Image 1 (cartoon, rainbow, N blue to C red):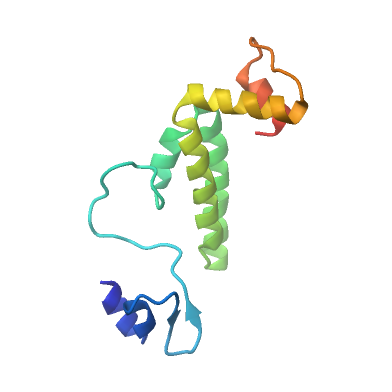
Image 2 (cartoon, rainbow, N blue to C red; image 1 turned 180 degrees about the vertical axis):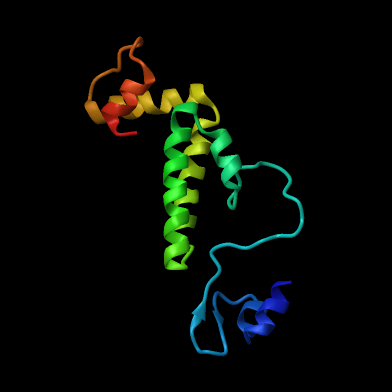
Length: 137
């Protein structure tokens, strides 16, 4: 499939394992995203995760913010006809989702970050939302 695509754009470099792909128009082409016709198996948060998988792994309090930012990125992609910012948005939130999939571990990470940034321990009874606000997470 990749070989077929590369042949269509005159790209022997990609077929032979090169780092880039030069089209018949002389411009470098790089793929930031690809579609695989095979069903995904394994971890749903691997690179290229679907927006639904990303959203499902986020803490409930972050899902609304994800929805807003994702919708904004979709509008920008549609207006600019450029998917770069959409993919950056999804990758950012995919990484957040990876951290948040284990809420207890995420809380620990946030508390440690707050302690390092503030130079003092976080009270054990401080709500996670408040700690996140203190450190800008």
